[in-house]
Length: 261
Image (cartoon, rainbow, N blue to C red; front, side, top):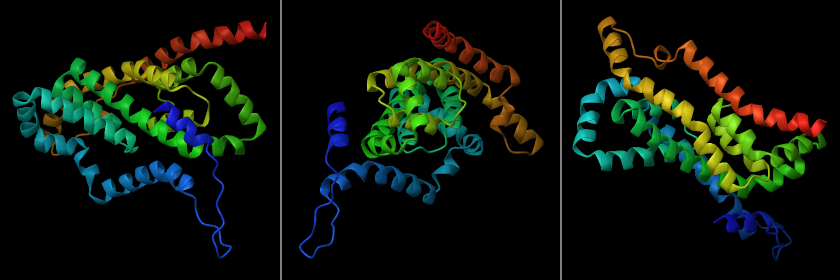
């Protein structure tokens, strides 16, 4: 699969001349941009169908009896279905990572739910990474200013460490970190491992918060207000993420200092 993507990137994208002298899009060009078109089309279709209404604490509050009942009756099937839904949402860059991770903790517990999220997120992120790499990677690298190219070379030399830091501390939106490495020469192996390991701390933290979402829903219903995910996130959790990112960045900083000397 990796070889196919690399071959696609290196294919000649010249546009052949038609009989009447007008240029016609080549099959190679259409093939390259097909994955990107599928992602954009799928994202638009999801919004048009109102999928975002299902990714909310309100939906969880209204459907928790049905959802918990299904999980209790079909634990394996429900786990596989949830992991597939999560992977699909990430692959189409649907902004639902945080709320779905809370769902996972509530429905499956922080450990099992966290592992499902880690697998689903890694699969989905890898899919969109490969799609972006095959469509935009080579083109955008050619358009980079020299300063950005120099930064890209530094990133490529220690891609695993940089990706690990970016995954641990969600400084950028998840979908941005999924796509950005496609502009650099990052190995798929490094991308997959750094993604899986890097998202584990945040994944387990949000899944753990999800275990207590029932009390938040009950409190919201008692007060007549709508439950909010902000009620679950504390300052301590945010500071913990920052601390983890600093720890993960130490090896990178040390290597930079040694290189400077």
